[in-house]
Figure 1: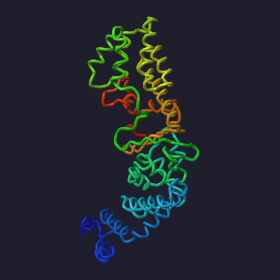
Figure 2: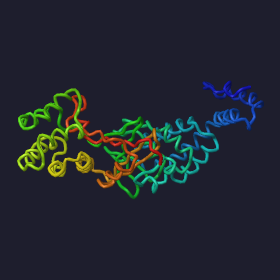
Figure 3: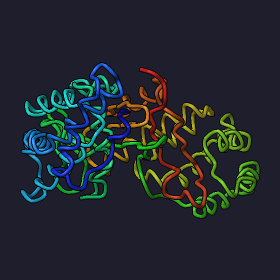
Figure 4: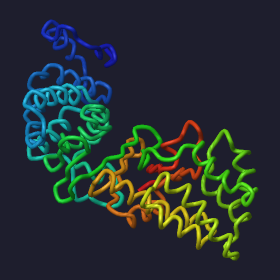
Length: 358
């Protein structure tokens, strides 16, 4: 008898137990498919005890959470159900539960690294599967994003931040988590100048920047990133002409202060001393990070890619630049002029961990 004949859900667990017990006599533990089924059956027959074990384990990392007792109990119940149904063999699950009871399954020192993998962070193989299973749990509750409840529930050194915010880490402070459930990560900012507002700002200088205006018109339906915006700007306003240089600074000030506000200065300076899109993007990234950190008041920004099973910890602008040059970052996709649909998003750096191996 094959294993697949037994795998189904049971509406009445007690009524099914005797049938399962009588059926398993023909299964062999040395057969991989049968072994998986035996393990599944063991879980079913011990659902009550497994659930209690997980509930007891989660009471430890959840002890310091800023949740009401009722909310805490609901989280424990939800976690119990999700984890007991996760794709883990019973022995492995019990080993992870034992670690949870001692405080968690996360190596915080590894997590507090510029770049690290799930395998380096989670101290038990089952914890990675559980983290995936819990990734969307709590999304939207108290403005929480993917992975936040999961991390807080898997370590007693990580807590949900009180009120609006993300997580509190022992030894680090407030950590803002940007998780990518799919292939692209989040942007570090929102708001700023629309395509219409920035086009109007450029139109004031139309006679002096004909190449820029022609490029803008040709890309009216889309956005203009650094690589599309800077070459025509260089052609119209070369740095070796002082009047052109000063005009360039005035134009960039009009554009960039819509987004970066008082943090725009270093970007304006970069445009007035360089024609290199890479150097200008680096200045923009530093200013973008400073603006975002000032707005959200965090101690560290942590990136998480579920698809690629990696984390990155960014505490300052130097960390951010190092990340972009690490070989593990995708393009930042920053627009000088956003598309109509992307206004308020596209001018902010998008931080995404790519598929590169650790």
